[in-house]
Image (cartoon, rainbow over all chains, first blue to last red):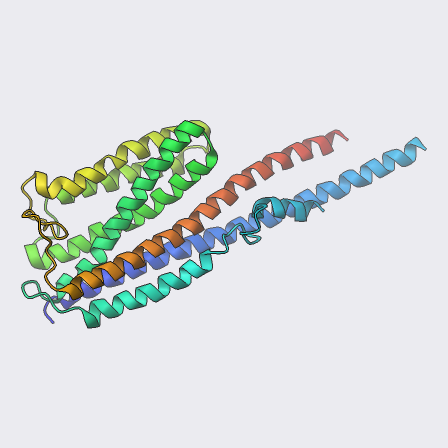
Amino acid sequence: MQNFGYLFAAYSIIFALLFFYVMFIWRRQAGLEAELRALEARLKELGQSSSAASANSSRAGQ
Amino acid sequence: MAASSSRDNVAGPSGAKNARGMPALAPWLGVATLVLMVASLFMVFEYVPTEAEQGIVQRIFYFHVPCAWVAFAAFGLVAISGVFYLWLGDQIWDDLGYASAEIGMVFCTLVLITGSLWAKPIWGAWWTWDSRLTTTFILWLLYGGYLMLRAMADDTPEVARFGAVVGIVAALDVPVIIVSVRLWRTIHPAVLVTRQGGHGLEDPRMVATLLVATVAFTVMFAWLLMLRFAQLRLRTRMKELRRKLALAEASAGDL
């Protein structure tokens, strides 16, 4: 079992680095999803306010 | 209905992606990666015989070579994407190149680290300025520069064009690395095709283990690329969504 430490270190580093990269992708995905939800909410809010404004203006026209 | 329509826009019309823009194939590739990795580890630590001269530390080889293969494939894909981006100007090629460069960098880093851990007990040094090691280190620096450029600069078509050129030029180092062990005097072994023309793996179990590990790493590369590419596509579409939102806010302010 000579040099086992080097073998262990090599495989540990491979899996650690790959694990951290997958975690990095996961966290970025969570961030993007949160941002997407915020954008969707803002768009919905704008859609509602613009439809309310157009309803008010048509009522004023009558 | 603005929320649902924008979500549909992000997910894409094909229906082959979920609401987060992830391809439906991605979880299956993740499972395949896991199964193949477990099989590779079993073969490396249980199945393959110990090499007579180097001992157990030679088992680093079975993951070191697939890491190099994935790094070279990823950087090759960066170059191909760069050519298509410069030719067609479609953002999809830039996203593919960027995703591939990032993954290639992860695997190139693993090649350098595992190579160093293998070199210390066999050559007696962590690092030597050997032709293959030096050209691989140059490749790592070139793509490190590419990723720094993409991370620091604004997300503009000019930066994407410049990145495509850097990605193509940097990939020219890959064939140099491959032939370096035959072109220059080196202490790095030429295992797959030796200087005498044969191959350096005497036992068929060694060949089988290397093949299974290479397939495992290739499937992992496809999985990671799919995830990261889908994210970058989502980011591109969100940029467009933000632009539309800014226009909608400006028009709402006018009312």
